[in-house]
Structure formats: structure tokens, C-alpha cells
Length: 424
Image 1: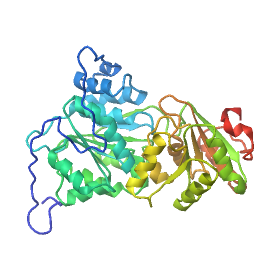
Image 2: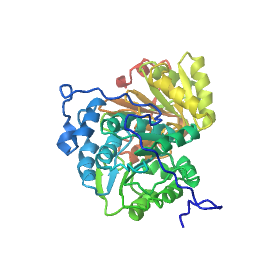
Image 3: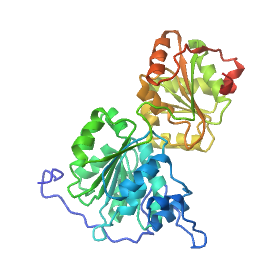
Image 4: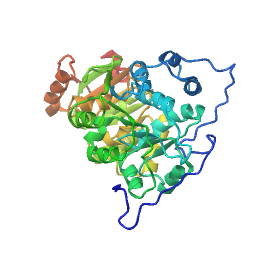
């Protein structure tokens, strides 16, 4: 018996009504209908990878003209139906690397409108962003995408599922909640994706991910993307993937080519002013702090220094986090102060500087934090602030990242070079 069954009585079976592709899918950001004529559509470079014309139309409409490296490697393999295991960091273009072949290969469940595609992600923010990237592409080929995550209206998400949806992008806990209440049926899933699998493992979601994967009872293709493929991620690959083809664009600890790294020795009492001085030289800055309390304290300090700043962390409700991210994206805020967990789904291309308020615990955390800058071919800076008792940790990081091992550069907040980091 299916372990989704209720404790009393048989599980109810929902029959999804038919729905035309133009109807609302209750997206976090509903797509605008495509208005392209044959005269305005120009095939993109994705067509050379074997992408069908209807999906390519959506790529054109979304402004995607040429594939990134991970997309060039992953899409042709995924289009064959093989399981794909991709190693690539945040910001490398993973969403289209799995989203394009998924939309190209799905056969819609026209009878019950059960989802045929599933994407599991570690955070609410990433669920929204993946859905927003895929939505216009999906619309072009008559498909729909729904983001399902905690902190938002459960009833609205259920209404979206009842209307019928092709691809569900979900965080593990909300998805399990819906599955246990029989609001969702995964037996029709043809393609499943685990995005940022290492972050889900780090956050303790591996048991929940495995529980969900066991619900995929029909034949299906599995794609997994992660910055690293060891530990719990390796276990998922071994147990739930069938002879996967591995694609990678970098070594596990390589740094992005357009990212510059700077380690600064600062005094505790001058640290916040150093952050403010760096932020004054760029349009957008993210500062990573270890704790929620540190985020709130630094936010208040920066505001007192005249910096347009806001904090995001797990104690804030989803609406407040989304509002802060929207203001940051729109340029109303210059600085976003975040914990690791709250910022893992941030996908903004024009972040000039990532500041590690304290040295990252290890190279893996450093790369995940720093990966918020130097995206989409742009240059960016990763700046680590180190107090006198943190210099040893800096040396460990430099060795692990295969950077030149050198003492942090001592600075004070009145140093003019902070306004233009390239002067260091």
C-alpha cells in the first residue's frame, strides 16, 4: 500500500480538470503570453544543441540567445533521456541546463494533469527563481510551471495543482506536506531534478529527498546538479540514478575566472565602517554573517552609517524576505546582509562584491557564498574580513582554494582604496 495513504480510509484520488495552456498556473510571477510572429523569431544557438523549435521559441522570448558552458555539455546528453550528474557552481546556468531538456522531453498527462516534471531545490528563493526562469520557456511550448514552497499560501498552491500543472518546482518540506495530504500525485513524473543537491544535504534534507524520490514509482529520468559530488550527494547518485553521465565545467574547488579575491585585516571596532566604505564603491553588495543576530546588528549599524541596507535570515517571514530581495534587485538597497541559509537561492547577476564578515568555515562555504558575484561573465570581488585572531583561518582557506598564501592586507575605513578594490 502506498505510504502516502491516510490512516483512516483509502487515499482520495483527485481528477485534475483539463486546462488550456493559456490559463493561469498560479506562478509566483505569472508569465506574459508570447507575442512572437515568424518574422520576429530568430533561432538561438540552443538549436545547435538539438533543442526543439517550440522550446527555442521560449528561449528567444526570454532573452536567452547562447548557451553557457554547463548548458552546452548537459543539454545534448539530457535530450537523449540519460541520467545526468552535473557539477557546476551557482551562477553557471544550471537552471536552463536541466530545464530546457525537461521541457523538450515531457509528455503531458492530458487526462489527469498530474505533474510530469519535478525540480527539488533547497530554498524558497531558489524555487521562485527557477520557476520564473522556466515559465516563459514553458509557455511557448504549451506547458506550465508552479513553485511550491513553505512560507506562502498553501491553499493557493493547492489551487494551482488542482488546475493542472506540468512542472512543479518545490522545496522538500512543503512537497512532503502536500504529498502526505494527498494533494499531489508524483506517480506520473517522467523527469526529476535535484538542484543544488549539496546544499540540500548540508541543510539536513537528505532523508526528506530520499522519501520523495521513493514516490517516483514510474520510469523516469533523473538529473542532479551540485557544486560537489561527494558525501550524501554521492549516496544519492549511487542509489537513485541509473548509470548517469557526468558533466562538469570546473574542478570541485576551482574558483570562477572573473572573480577577484581579497583578504583584509580589520579592527573589530572599525569593521562596519570598512563594509560601508566598500559598499560605497559598487551598486550592490552582499555581506554574509554567521548568525541572525549578527545580521540584525550589522543592518542597524550600516543604516546608522547612511547605507541603504537590509537583513534577510530565517527569523523573517517569507514576505519580508521577498520584499528585501526585490528592493535589492531593483537597486533600492545597496547592501543585503544575509546568513548562508537565507541567501542560498539568490540569483542576481550584477552583484559587485560579496563580503565575508567573518572568514568562511571552509572552502566549500566560501565558494557558495562568493558565487553570488562574478556571474554571467561579469567581474566580481570576494572580500574576506579577518580580525587578528582569524588570520590562521585565512591561510587555510587560501591553501584550500589554491590561491597565493599571503597575510591579509591591513586596512582602516578611511583607506581610499576601499572605494575601488582594484587599487589593492
